[in-house]
Length: 266
Image (tube, rainbow, N blue to C red; front, top):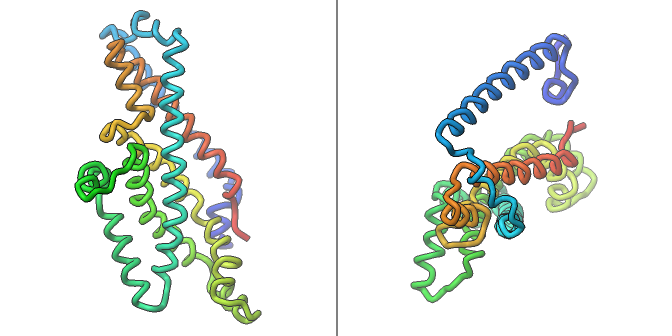
């Protein structure tokens, strides 16, 4: 008997699939552990893991400095995500609008922002806008370009989710006398979000990573503060290992939070 697409994506895997998945996971974990062990041994042989490179982590000021950078990263990423999710919705509405006067400019903005590197947008805010008399703080020089660049991708992710909602849902809503806005925000969009949670989480993770461009405008985010520690203590590998762990924790928190919205669509 054939299985539906929803059952394939969200249903319980068959016994053979579970065994194969566990075996693949075990092999992957073993390979990653071997690679990690090889890297650690390499760093140890080069003297990069000596105790003198870790001593400054016992100082409270070190962790306070890293915490300040982490807060800067979270603040910038949170605002950039809010800009991306909200402006992405505006672009989606324009993209789906029937009047060409709304649809074409929205498509143009989406393609422009999606095709322009985030770093280039940051340089525009950092170097070009001040020439026009528009001066932004370092926070907005980083946050605004990251948010706008991500908004274009989020708009397309939204659109994919909207198109995945069965047409019968909208037809039934219209037959009940709902307006187009009610159909979209009450019926279509909530269901679309359930389809696109994994893609949205991936974009939010990218937002966190893009905040590392803060060095361009000397914004005090995590990587910028890490560079200061490296310059002061000459501990390249230890600092980057700790910072990588902090980024992993932030992204793990995003993934855990997203599970409240995920799950099968019925």
